Length: 460
Image (cartoon, rainbow, N blue to C red):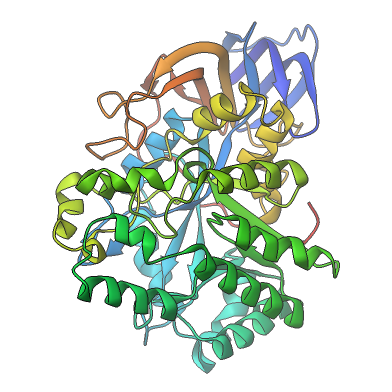
């Protein structure tokens, strides 16, 4: 199949121009004005933006959590992502303590293979670093193309590793060209505050937020940054939410250290006042929690200062019935909220339309930087000859409203119910095939491919 996209406004992280795109097979083969190639399908993109497919490097599909599973699986989650303009996601494999990384990879591959509609890759979450685990790192990077390893500084007894394990893992990962992702919050302090609030009968969702004050994230981020500095291992802080944590990264730049930072769309536009809505606040119970208005300002500024490179989602949806597991105790509410379908449109509407970021910055933080950091560029994350034809065609002026009644995520509420959005994803191509058009999905489950990634560089 060949596709000719005519007269679109092509926007990348660095460029902005009117041109045609010619796509043959899975790749972009020509870019220019007034291209005259014979094509099986011609798409008129006049008046529309033509951008690289979005990359969301932080999702949790079909994830076991607190005795249940996140409600989007690889089929529903990657399809919903495509509807929202995200063509590639990176999910987290969770190693079980006592088990190998290989067994975790086999388990997650079994869930994803043959089921994904959009493209996907994996981060490997290391929850039990020992000599056996250490011996698997090289193979994961060089043979499996899994070049990023997540650590948790919270969730003791299930996911958390201590600083000794962190240092050992960093040294091994650095040796083989990988990167460490971190959930940077002080788990011991949070556990203490959770127990204290429960003992005092403070059980509403508001106390989920009050059990994770800003200092718990700022302290852990500072500690992680220092360990990464000592080992020289590339570091990436996931879902950073607040001024204190970003200041830890800002301080690191004074010693010429580069730390990659991801925030999530919810932290840019929602705030902790939502937790005051009695149990309704459970819709936004996630870790770290939503923060304050001043933190939103910090994060937008951090994007423009180049301190925050990626806007992801931490998409981890649960049905309302699952959230009700915590109706009498905030600590039993499954953590996470749905956003993978909404990320691109929300970021465009709240960021570009409201003049908080430029169009080029939008592409950079929604696609290109993730591709570069996680070893997929220039195959993914840009519009260039030879790149995968992962393309989003957006009408920058079309207004619409977000609602659970119309979204495609497998969850029965929206974290953004009734939000009025300017900018609508109209057509999405994945590897040269029209995946979404006219609000219809034209690719089947199993079309999504696993993306093996290259070793990490610290240059973006």
